[in-house]
Length: 343
Ligand code: PEP
Ligand code: MN
Image (cartoon, rainbow, N blue to C red; front, side):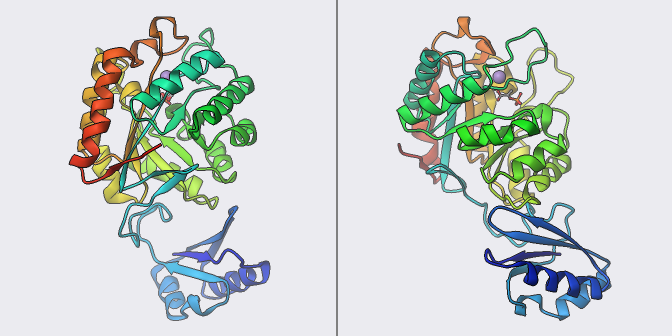
């Protein structure tokens, strides 16, 4: 059972509810978020029935009470008839739109980031991506510009009028990333870094949670639950390809994940065809597949001169491949009964 308190609920209201839960034999887990407090109740069927009979909504400070049978309570589709819409700055990601997040894999220089932002705009992008803290397989590979990269990304985002999303790889960096970005990205390698998930859930910015490269759906949704449990329900899931037995492509895009997310959770889901494929020629076909399966948006890498890119050049779109993506963005939303986000 989940008890959602009203935004103004004070400590007395919280204590009163906890007392009622404990008197009924249940255990209460309190999570105080930026905007609301949520009390998770664990107990056997008898405890939950007893609490239901008490009608907790009659207590002051209680906004909503629901009983949820799945292990992920706050992100579950139960009690939600529609997919939620998450606002990133003034850009929605949700069931009515197709949102394109685009930009360079990594922030390298102010000029390269601005070029990337302009390419993103030509393809129909409304949110700018760019990595400042890069989780690289090799410690000898470019690790990103760190805080300087955050500053560049924020500056470029302001210049082109786009909200920005960037990855955070360490719980200690969550505050500084949140100061510069409109959305925090948690990458595939950190999907089960629980301290990072909790820190990201506590800071009050929307979170883009990529699927771990060997994670099951349940593990992914439970990772999202860690963020939600800190009071932040502004979570967008991202299918970015999983590791399979096929060595000729970087990862295998699991298109099935898209309708499964919509079936099991109320969270929006986007697809990352760039990191799934690792190859430019496959990015647009996979983008089409993701949208056709019901994805609420895409995140793609672009670069004005991919041969010079410090990270993931072979998958970055430019020139003709970018034109192909802009055609997808111009035609697919109408086909899917959605609108394209406008700038
Ligand atoms: C990225 O988007 O830059 C990235 C590193 O993605 P992933 O975590 O999916 O590999
Ligand atoms: Mn990358």
